Length: 344
Image 1 (cartoon, rainbow, N blue to C red):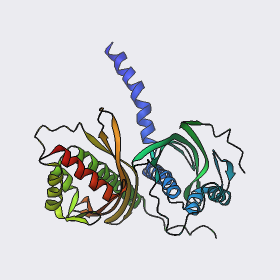
Image 2: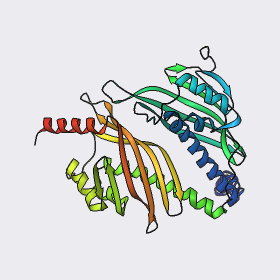
Image 3: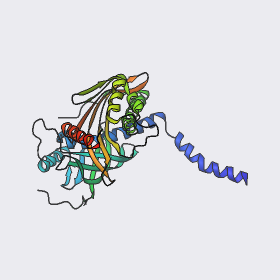
Image 4: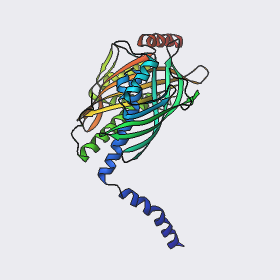
């Protein structure tokens, strides 16, 4: 019986071990880089669309890339850019979108050589009459990516509306050269860059987790020794000042504190690493308990970050918190009214 058990274990484990060993270090790094590049393209898609940067949006597609959705089907960057301009309107000079944004999540990526199959979710938010973030559309993107001239591009994107449902196959009636490829990096350099990007994304998520847990020491420790937090005219420098800011806002939490009133969602991380420095941009959404106990979206905005490698760890050197819905003035007024209602 024992021998049959050992044989069964070997049958189950050997193929997995052989499979893991069948990839070289170079192939493993290439796969990580491919997934990282595709994730970035997914996020930049929403970023460019929200900014009405239609040229950059269209440049995410391959030369013969196809976009299929509610406006019909269009092939090639020029046709895709023209479609957006016609249907969404050209942005005015200095356009800054303060009324809506896309939240992009749940990417599933399967890389096969120079092609990849990808599916992801999107949630489109817009401003309510009282300038609160309100979900308007929910759906999914079904994509095929291709590696073209060394870059991952969208070969075919199909946009499905889930809530409300919109079938991209039944749309309503629709009325210079590539940049030179950068110098190749070594496998070690590419692996280090991928590790750095993942480490910085983790800090962005930890930031939300620690403020929700009222772990003020842990929150402040995410900043560099000379780190800075900024929101409008409010600026705090150094870990001590940053912690004091939180204590002033929330008070000292009880030792057994469990947050049942609010939490932060962070999404759309974009990270650019340059040696021991990096920049990052991400979105945040504050969910609070409503009067009837249901979750209510209260505040959304954008984090603009500078990171530095300090003592071997990535730390926030400078974070600018830009509230969008409601505006900083509207949010400060509401918080003052809440504190007045709660009393001393």
